[in-house]
Each structure stands twice: as structure tokens, then as C-alpha cells.
Image (cartoon, rainbow, N blue to C red; front, side, top):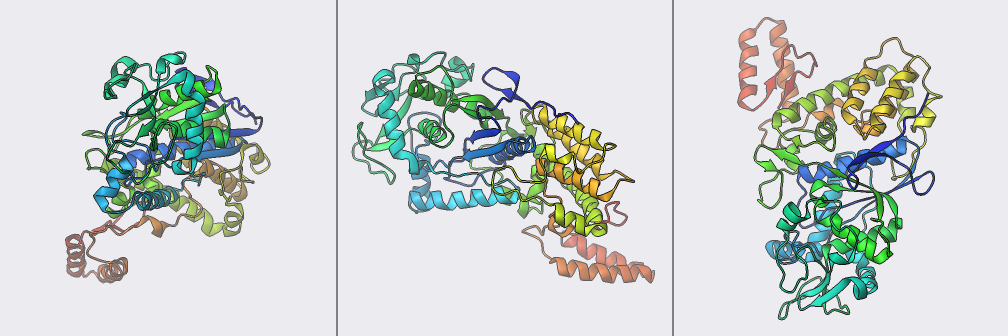
Length: 498
């Protein structure tokens, strides 16, 4: 069995490139995390499904993985500009809580959402834990690259080579999103440190050589990636919206601090937007879907993960309820197939489920170890799966190959378990733990409990067996009035759904 070379799309060069780790046998990845001033919408969560899939693929290829997802709990303004309110301060005023309490609450909700999406837990350092290091960075680059205004310390983008190379849109889309700040030398210059305006008191502010205030948003990722992964490191990921301003500013800071033209990461990767028919999903309108909103409508979070995996991470993904329903049905079919396997070979399944915590290389499921578990007749399937994942994370083909593995007949059960467990460990659908009943979620507005449904369904079956179709139809009508659809003849055999 030959291993396909892992090839990834580098946004910096706009080319597919082979992954060549800086440290042999290791992969170091930094992912731009959330600003914890509100709930994350499902468009935000697509970025973390993508980052988790990348991490799982790196583990599958045998690399020892270190991944960081930062928590922005200070410094991010209400736009990409260097003017306006800090998002944390604004949320604190909105909810009547301290900015620290806001950050703690929404970080906990974010981490719970990661768990519900079966995203392996990375390191979650907070920006506020690195303020002193950010001040030290500012001091190190100030003389050659920065200038002081009344509003704070600003980075002069003309002092680094090829600023905006990542975005390739600095003069239109990029600069169009930057508000004017009086005194800036260049439109794209950005804040390293923002002074607290005279007469104002912020909840999150620190003393610095440039006055009391808070760090600029862009600085934290440069500092935290260097502190935790070293510069240069292997891969930096984030949403495509970061490609235009935030990541070019990170690169500029990295170049200034490291006295090098190197961007700080060898490969920059960006997932595309989740869109609905009104456009890209955003919190700015106040009208956005959270993961909990999907659950409240009766959808398991892993149906959303599957929906994300059905599209390539670099493609826009349209969110529709019909698309989510189709993903849930597809997931149900997989769960049923695995349940059948578990019912026949429970001892094999329980012994084969890998432990995916922490974000490191778990034993028993990486590509090189599969060779000893699968006979030569079926290695071709795993080889095809490896080729798909190695081709810039082609998860849509990977899902098809997983389903092909689930449908294999006349195959030794231990080999079938090995095939499915390895594919699922990369795709992260948790098939060996997920139960059929887990996928039957009661919507928030449902007027009937599952126990009541099962009891009435049993009574309806008795009525149908006795050819009492009037009672059977009456029960169906009562179900319909309470939002329960009875699925007679459903090929999946799920019988009902809310």
C-alpha cells in the first residue's frame, strides 16, 4: 500500500503544495478562534469543522499534531477598522455584565459547541493571558515599523515587503473595509496598541509605553502563534474573511518582528463562507443561526458536520433546511449500518474505537497501522480514501468511500471494522459511539414526548394488526396535529419523526 503525498492549497501562493513539516514527524497548526462576545453562528463553526478535519488528516498521515485555537477576549473592534467600540465592552454594556464574565460565558458555550460537533479539543489560550508579551512585541517593532498618534501606536505597512500579497485585493475589497483614522500614513496601516480615549474607562485596559489602553486585534495571533508554536510554523487556518485584512496584518507583524520576509507560517489555508439565500452568514445583523437553533429544530449537530463535509472547504456552502435534512438522512443510514455491525460483532467494535483526546496522534488508527488490520483485497478502498483526503481534504469523496466500506459484503468483520473506524476517525462522525436514538431529537416547540409517541405508536400497530383502520388513522391525525410525522414504509425503518 502506497501513501499519497498530503497536498494542501496555500492561499499565499494560490497553489496546491505538498505538506513538508518544518519539524520532522510533527505538524504545528494555528487556527484563528472566536471573539467571545456572543454566540457563534453555524457559519463560524464551519471554520472549526474544517480545522478539525485538517488536524484529523494530519494525524491520519502519522504526524504528531499540536494545534492552537485562540480565544479573542479583548481587542477586536466592531469591524475590521481601528475605530469604534471594542466588541467585549459593547457586549458587557448590552448584557449588564463584566467583560470578563461575558468572555467566560461565551467561551464555555463555544467549547460546548465544539464537543457537540465532535471536534477534538485543541489548546484554547486567551488573548488576555498574553498582553505583556504583546507589549514586548510592540516595543520590539516600534522603532522601525510603527508611529504614535493620539489614538495609539500604528503599524506602517510600507515598511515590510509585499504587504497584502495574501489578500491580493488591498486597493479595493481590502482597503474598502478600513475606516479612516486621522493621522494614519497609509490607509491600510493598523493599530498595534489603542489608547483609551480621554475621559473613558474600559474594563479591559493595561499600562503600556504608549499610554493606558488595549492591544490591537491583529497583534494577538502573531504573539500567541510565536509563543506556542514558534516561528515559522507549519499551517495557519481561518475563515476566508480573514484573508483580506487580519491575516495580511499578522504577516506584516511577523515580518517586522522576525526581521524576515517570511510570513510566519509556511501554508495559509482558508475555508469559504456558509451562505444562505440572503448572503453570507454574519452576526452584524443580529439574525443568525446557532448550533443550538438547529438542535431546537430537531437536528443533531453531527448532521451539520456531515453537511459541511459534503462540500469542499474552499467552496461556498449554501445552508438550507432541506440540505440539513438530507444530511441527517444520510447520517441515519450510516448509523444504522454501524449499529448492524455492532450488534453482530460487539466485541470487535468496543475494542477498536480510538481515543481521540488530546490533539495528538492516537494509537491504533493512523494510516501506517491500518496495513496490519486490512487484507490486500480491501486495501484499495483505504488507499482511495487516503488519496481523497490527501488531495486537499476532499471529504466529499471520502464520505462516498466510507459508505462504500459500510456496504461491503463477505468481508471478515475485523477488517470491516478497521476500514470504517479509520475513515470515521478522519471524518469525525463518531459512528461507533452514536446511537440511533441520539439522532431523534425532540424539537423545542414539540407538544409531545418521545415516550408518549412510542406508546401511541404501539397502540397504532395493534390497531393496524386488528384491521381497525379508523383508530389507526385517528392516531395518525393526532400525531400530525402535534408535529409528529408517522413514516409508514420508511426504508430506513425510523417509523416517525418530529
